Image (cartoon, rainbow, N blue to C red; front, side):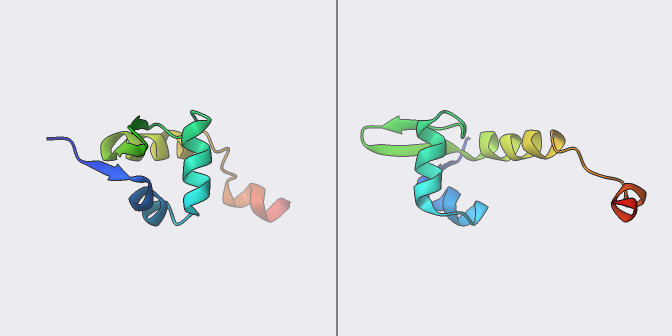
Length: 68
């Protein structure tokens, strides 16, 4: 069964302000949906979103970081 998080739980998990969670959700950057006035986020989808964001980061190799 799917587990859903509140905006507060996502905020705590990501360690970013609640206002940022609302802004990202309203701008359709953070995947979520509203039930009445309340935002809900599927835990599995949030974890996938994090993985996708990590994969898109152009990580430098140690050698590149040292040369910079």
